[in-house]
Image (cartoon, rainbow, N blue to C red; front, side, top):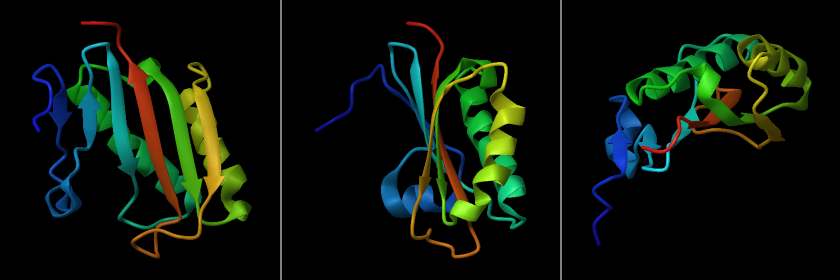
Amino acid sequence: MSAPDDVRRISSGGPYEDVIGYSRAVQLPNGLVLVSGCTAADGGGPYEQAITAFGVAFKALEQAGLGPEHVVRTRMYLTHARDVDDVGRAHKELFDAVRPAASMIIVSGFVDPSMVVEVEVEAYGGAA
């Protein structure tokens, strides 16, 4: 089974993309761009990890010709409820003017236990 020719797959060159078989982002012909879960591999607290993770997502959006102003939905996965305020502060700093639909979900953990935040982003740039 092959994918439609008008679906663009965007790679970040991350090590897990080939190992697991996914794209950093997928751009659909209807203008929607779906960005896979992004994390911060360089440590830091929940605020810093959220800023870094959203930065990874923004780089993927840039490859699709979009920016943070095109974001229509975010999902934030946290390993601890105590980090809600820090991650929420990062989200507000990045998206206060945009106001995407957003979810914040507490999960049991990530592949790397030093990671406490993972984010997903969906953006819309208009139909091609």
